[in-house]
Image (cartoon, rainbow, N blue to C red):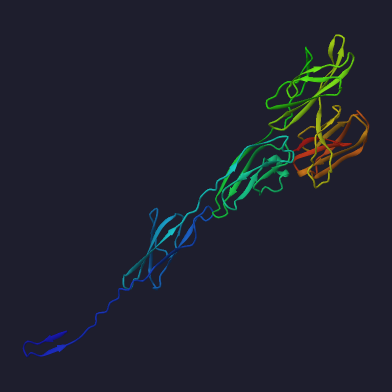
Length: 390
């Protein structure tokens, strides 16, 4: 600056330095995590190399905040403005909050017990999610039969376990889950079997949908003349006075269950007549190794129809009666089994007489509520009765 006096023409000078402060404070924006079904809130991360700055956030759903690290639960683009109060200069930065809440896909179908699933009905569940986690909820009365429900495919060990099963699949990455309820029913039912004699040397057993039929005769002088493989056959009788027993095994090809029945015929001078009516085989499972650690399995065998075994009342709360009789004198065991054929109570053991009625008390005071199997075991035979303790 030069100052001049116009009267005498003298001058004076002075100087001043004009400084500039337009340095922006700098801004960095980040986020703590990804929004998932487990992580429902994340923290926005703001920073600046300049001390004493102020922060101003804006984002989706009219989001605003003056905190340095505010929290949000909405995905989208967020912008941070950092202001230096000394010079009023600002810097901006942006960050995107990502959301991963994709529900995993799940496939599971209704299922049926059949005679082809004697080793246990397997309920299958699947998902395309990598390393998906599975969990099953079973009908309350049968919880004790499933010590591990944290599996992808659940095995239902017995055909009497029916009802609604729910499977849940969880994505381990985002914690999101999906569930489906399926119905389990019992289709392990043997087809009806009854043989009748018709005129013209014809035997009829009755047709079933999807059935297969196998006829046999125990007298070589009598033959199946026609119709083998069908529910109705023509036969050629043997000599007058001869007797033959015709048997048929009917199999339901859908559920794999079979039933057999027989009829006894005699050829008389007046024609073929029935000497004994059609008789259906009663079928149970033969005794195997009944160790307390094994699930009982075996092939179907025949037992005399005179065998009797029952529990009453059923269901019951504290005590019940177990009644039984068998057609031949034998050593008998009556045992109560719980989950997966684990022995709970050895109820009775001893030799009994043929065709005599016996009754044993069943005390359930030391048993938890739930479903049990009561087994009558004699010789190579076993009969099972389901028992519900309330």
